[in-house]
Length: 344
Image (cartoon, rainbow, N blue to C red):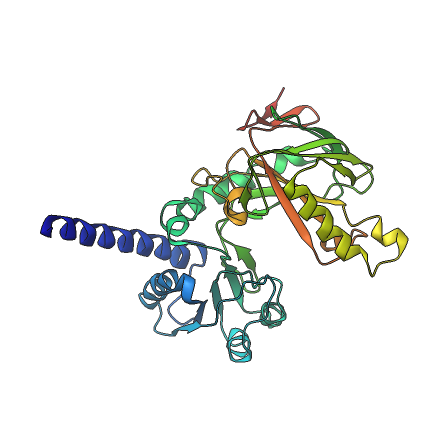
């Protein structure tokens, strides 16, 4: 019995040390916190162990560290309590380790409007993800690798994505590829999710045609049966019958109710496409982790207004594709789930 107890204590100590190692990476590498900076860590009961590890790591760097516990919310986008929102506006650094995302809340937006507060958000993070998953990436190396892709993207407009699961879709890009989701959040006003490590782009409206087959995860849930979507002129026109597709259709139907006919026709817009670069991440059924898995691809349906698009519905849903091949004109970006980034 004493041997088993000793093993459990040893496991607990190892887990705590792994979490502290990840927390130090967030504090020192991702945020590059300096001794004079005030830091606020916002957490909830389900994420409190992660919050404590972050607090300990931050306190090693600055004595101006505060941790606030807020009630758990199951609703994405729910505002934090007023006292938390007010504190967020007064910090140089805010770390959000909560069950539900606070990224799109008024509290986060108001904190960012100060122009000085940089924010990292880790919605849905759990202890396992924090200590051994995509959070443990070498973010300095990841930043360097992702920024190295910038020259490849220049003057390349046409994209084709295929996969063993049956995806075959083409589109043109409507804006520059985003290469700033690299885990380094060291400038005033920055907002970033962790784990990081993806490259993404806005598909030009009305240019996407073909078939998308989601076979990894949907909205952070592992799927057993692939979701097949037919796309015409940038809009999903049909989704294969399944329990998940019923939920997708019902959500979009609800969003469409208050809209006029022309706007309602746009709700199933394919708003974003991207692929992951994080070699430590795995498809585990968590939205943030799944979309940064190295060599996996993701499509986002819904609101594309952040890119200047017409579909301003305040809702996005995303799915992950396994082992895609991504071609950018004469460049193979990804081949069967392997990052290639070279001419054919």
